Each structure stands twice: as C-alpha cells, then as structure tokens.
Length: 282
Image (cartoon, rainbow, N blue to C red; front, top):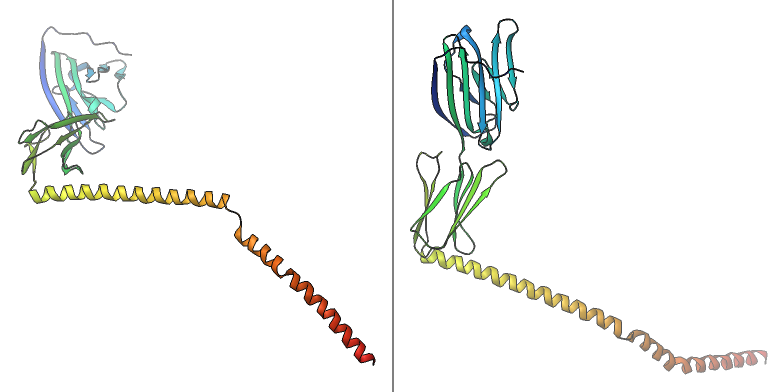
C-alpha cells in the first residue's frame, strides 16, 4: 500500500477545471488528466475522488527507483490509472463529483481539481389523455427537466419519479380551455428549449368527449349483459333442482293407461289359438 505522497518541493500550482459528460449509449468512457505529463521527472501522484452520492476513494501512482512503478486503488475496477491519466469506463450518473489530483515531481507539486458533471438527455413527448387533458413527459434525464406551459394555467400537476439508474422522469398534466397550447421543456443537454404545440379546436374537443362517452356506454352495456347472463344461469340452476321430471311421469301415466289393453289382447290370443287347435283335430 502506498501512503499519500510527501510534498518534496516548496512551490506548488493549483488548477481547477469543470468537465461535463453526456451519457448516452453504453460503453462511453471519460478521461481525466492530471495536468501536463512531466515525463521521467514524475515522482508520484494521488487521485482523491468524492462522488455525488457521498462516497469517496483513492487511487495513487508512484515511480520508485528501486521497486519501479507502484499503483494502489480502492476505487471501482472500472477506473484505471495510467501514469497521470485516470480513465472511467462506462461512465454513469453516480461517477460525477470532485476529482483532485496531487502530482509531485522534481520542480514542485501540481494540484488539479476537476468537477465532473455527468448528464443524461431526456426523451420528451406531448400527448392528449383520455380525459382531454394534455400530458408533457420528459423521461430519463439528469438532472430533472423543467416543464412549463403557454398559456399558464392554475390547473397544472407535476410528478417527478427517480429511476433505478439515478435519472428522473418528469410528468406535467395540463387542463386547457384554450385553443393553442404549447409545452416547453428545458434541460442542460438541450441547445435550445424544446417546444411543441397542440391546437385544440372545438371540433377536436367534441370528438374527445364523444369518444369518452362512447367508452362509458360500451362498458355499461357489457356490465348489463354480463349481469343478465349471470342471473339467467342462476335461475336455470334453481329450476333444474326444484322441478319434477315431467317426462318420467308422462311415461308412467301412459304405461298405466295402456296396461289393461295389453292384458285383454293376450287373453284373446289364447282363445284364438285354442280354437284353431280344436278345428284341426276334427
């Protein structure tokens, strides 16, 4: 382990800089330089990193004559230190913060403080909800986008949602009584303010309310049909359980009605066959 380097010379130079990175596709990297490369004169350097989420780490490099270059780091493995260059692979929102580099060489100590700001550009959309209100949405932005409306209205609702990757989704709903409404979205990643307008004529508003009314009527009709079918099935089950089997009773009545005739027919046949036998004997 390498301890923080001692200041070998009395003189020192301090430089501050701001670096802004806009993250987009996966795999983007950020490179921070600790001043100009002094070549073989460098004795060592140390990076002191304080992230925006209040976490901190150290990454140091020393070129010792007897043991050669030595590197120590307790930072994330995606941070690599090569001489005076610190590279951050796959830069994310959480990598933003203060990066201070103290570099020592024969002529003195050079200190560089870099404020790394990581931005994410939001995607913006403007739509009409089923209730006729307007919805302006800015998704996946860091920092959170600012949304405003023209003309201004007292009936505006704004919701901010923090996503898992530390970005923000901002949703603004607007109920309009005017004909022409414009949504304005401002963000540090935009060169100009994003704007889009919707013209709500009387005809458009009437169609919206017609569609809403039609949807309500359709849902009501489906509920009535479902309730009637359920009622019919319930009544049918009760009728089957309580009514006597009519066909069985009818069959029993018919059997009783024709039973005497069957007996009479059988007796007549006996007499008939008896007569035939007597006649043949004569």
